[in-house]
Image (tube, rainbow, N blue to C red; front, side, top):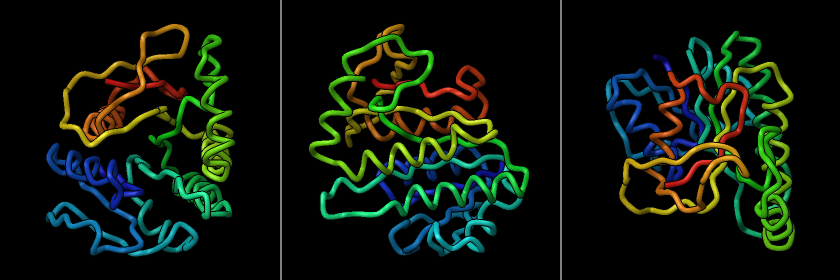
Length: 212
């Protein structure tokens, strides 16, 4: 497949990019700082640009079969604004314009899926986020709404506590209150789940929670 990766220089995004290349996909990465990617491969095309640069987003998305976003907001309290929300809206607009339907991304259980049942994470995580990372929660809410309010064929994986531990190959996924899903998950396993959604149809237009 031809896959566009957003957030490819981040901890999860690098694993996504490497896994796609190892599986034989053609990858286009939209990055602000190409030197941070540190991946070279004949099947990798790197486009330099910010999410606010519509022309760069269009160049990265045109011709793709799917978009995988490993974007996530900064946890720094000093960061303000809604750059990622605005950028995600641009991505959605360009995908619709270019008739690219499949979007795979990330969020947290602070945001509920309609298939969830009442769960402590729905109560505790939003309160913690508002107190500790208020702008990050605003961004996550806006980014997610930009996708779920569209007609895109999306899967958004909700993660709680990503780590740098080696991949375990063990993934739990499902909906809060229904399925036994924990909190901790290695970034490598998160990336593996995101890539698997290129062909897995279980979570179309849904936001499964995932963990190891």
